[in-house]
Length: 217
Length: 217
Image 1: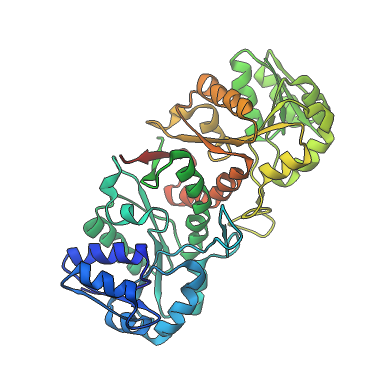
Image 2: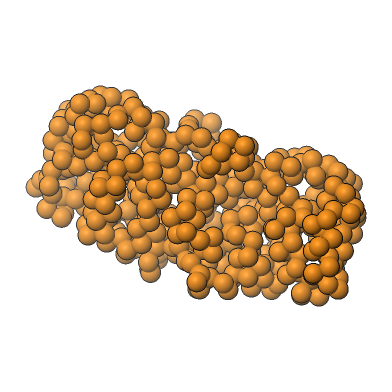
């Protein structure tokens, strides 16, 4: 499959590397076609890896991942071009974290809105599925790093898109507890959860953790 | 032990009933000394149960629980009397949920502040420990309703108070995975998590669930 990833940071590279290792063709998109981080990744990821502008990645991909920093996501997607997103599944992995006021970070949007909703509103032709934003990127693509079944969430307005992403999470990455939270407004929940996630990371002194959902009778 | 509980709703009654069943003396406090819901609870809970005003409950209790609705908590605690809270451990179970704008509810405070912090700031003499607000009240007092080890959080500025509450959670209620998230500002995390909790409740079609924290090597 041809996959476009927006963002050349650790999250985009980690997802890209995993997808290339599965035999997919992956194009990492950024502001410039010759981004150095992307170039380094293309070299190390090997066959199937390429780089380009946000628009190049959007045009290339049949499936798209938003792995940009949350505060930069809307601008990056504008540069990708609304028309290039139309009809495509866009997995929104970003979190609207604002580190500018120090630690712990706050969210640039929350409570009555979310980044996932902002993206879906700004690009109504994209089939946005919020997912993977609740775990560290190493865990995103390799949930077996943590013992037992633990949870990953999907939310979005397009049921078929959510099914496709859920299948991908199970078959490509190995997730077993995939929980559909409903429409894209549920992104408020998973984005606001980051506030708790960051505190847990501090308490556990590792990012290599996740929550499992346990239920009674 | 003598325990004061602010709030006569399901949460206050459920915690009160459990504490009475353990042999403690529990006074449920509300705006009026003859609150009907409290009177019904006193009758059903039996020996050790009593009712009174917020100030009565505060004066009575060596240990205090805030089980009022989040939007009413500061006012309830003002009525309880700052002097009556001084030096006492106050377990803040409340969530600042605002249902006035319809479903899903929003939070009256979040992101750069929390109800737990507001309470600690308003009543600096109280030893506030945020806890139990991340699960349904039946689960609060009986975690064994859900199979396996699953998580309950504590946060607060007073280490001894957190230890006391953690011991109580383990020994009285049976919690096994008690996670100390740090100072009271971590209440932002557990209160904002409610947004995700509510979506999970919708997806799972039950409130009888919780998250377990799983970690890798």
